[in-house]
Length: 327
Image 1 (tube, one colour):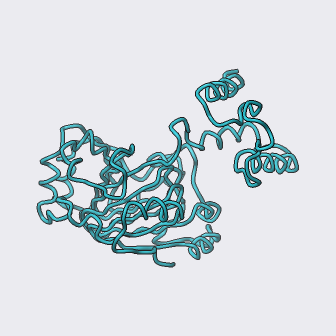
Image 2 (spheres, helix red, strand yellow; image 1 turned 90 degrees about the vertical axis):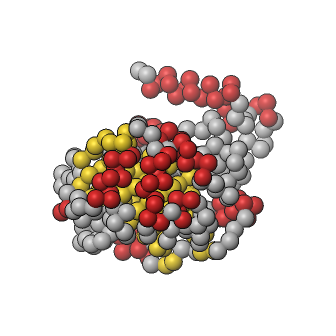
Image 3 (cartoon, one colour; image 1 turned 60 degrees about the horizontal axis):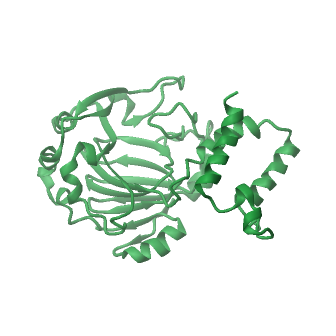
């Protein structure tokens, strides 16, 4: 596996115009080392308690024999952990007490659960006016199966060390992904156990490893994860914490492309192979625009639904979709 490209300094302009445009992972060493919760050391939990509300968080709890890997049950119908609700302060108490079980809480919304902390988490690489989602991830020596996120991500390690293993989106066929809709926490995950890969059951995973990037992050380090990049995350210490910023570089009207994938299950997947390939050409032309603007030969007023998006065109497209789906 290859290392993730790393820099020790980065300004917002270069981040937006170079790093985000390249859509490749990048580590910025020590970017958030001056955050209060990073510098707090042994006082880390007390700093979080100071800002925490009483709102419960969803916590995954697993027995010692699951070795920190939150995953499916053997039949892929259930899971190897329990979901519980507890206040953040109770979760911190559990982590500080130690023990043999594994405990993990992901995507805790900072604005609602730690509102006072938000002002102490400046992210110099993002425009302060841009919409973002700021979350806290907290647990002990846990492993999160490889998955992708729709949003772009700045993952900031604030306590303990974390290991990320990343794969470009085109490795989807080599990662043996589980069900799309029955998931551990919302996103489809790789079924490969990264600590003990079974290459008899998952032989193409060897090809994924040839494209993998890996990095160990210390508190204060930040990892940029582009949209749709697969990432497997391992917390290497008894208490690990990460703050992340999610954002999308897309127009406000856009929904998740997963809806297009689901829709294609009804409209494209089971067509005869030749017809399916013909539709690939149409998508390449109209959607991916591999030959440039497909409507460039028409005046703007004659482009119909393929004209630049407006509220009227958005409403007409939704109406066209809803009619057959509501039968």
